[in-house]
Length: 344
Ligand code: FES
Ligand SMILES: [Fe+2]
Image (cartoon, rainbow, N blue to C red; front, side, top):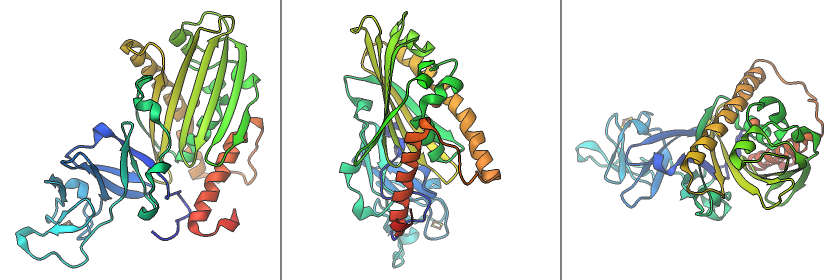
């Protein structure tokens, strides 16, 4: 496709589904404001087409999978995984040019990644690293959270964990998160936000998850890969007993559905007590409660932005360093795709 629309980074991979969501029944998703239909073919590969029949605009996801093709549920045109119309009811000749757009998709680590930009730029080597999701040395689980807010607000939330002190009183809050400063680093392909907290009281979550009774040393390293990939690496060690340590990864794939709505794919994994399914379930529920606390702030934040324009010069201080750098980075990528890189 030519040029960007100024709203989204399109030449990138976004998570669009969990592998087990995609089968022989069509699944609709909206990605970057575009309707997309996914299904799985007999050779197990996932196909993705524009979810709009080129005949009369019916969503193809209302149709059905026939063989390896998708048949529109309105008048029965059939499309293959390349989006080419391969059958007309009654055996009539296929009208010339009858096709719909196909999107590159790659399945990896239990997620399905889609490239909404120019198909010839879709290099699987650019898929962001979420290998912990199905690495046998790690275990955990996650889900998809539909959020009525732009994905940028989720990204900002995850890049500044100082909010934990106020938003996550019941789960992640520790005083250390606002007392210890952050260090940000920008690399070619990622931005990191590091906070090292020493000899602090563990949050309610870590007290239970790691069995800590006294103070801990807690390292948070947030790794951001634009536009919406965030891996939070957490390490908590007993402040007096350094070999009592737990590590976790919070895997966050933020996908824009539309300008004002997102799909938040997350998974929480740990590298200890791998066989303890009760711990997995408890961590999952605790993390879900934590994200519900975030959404309870972010959706009203989105509503506020839609109803009243934000101030021209928002207040910034030290906690905003990572957020600001990530915002500028994404704006630059969007401008580059729109062909006016000089304007940002
Ligand atoms: S709208 Fe799809 S075949 Fe008519
Ligand atoms: Fe949060």
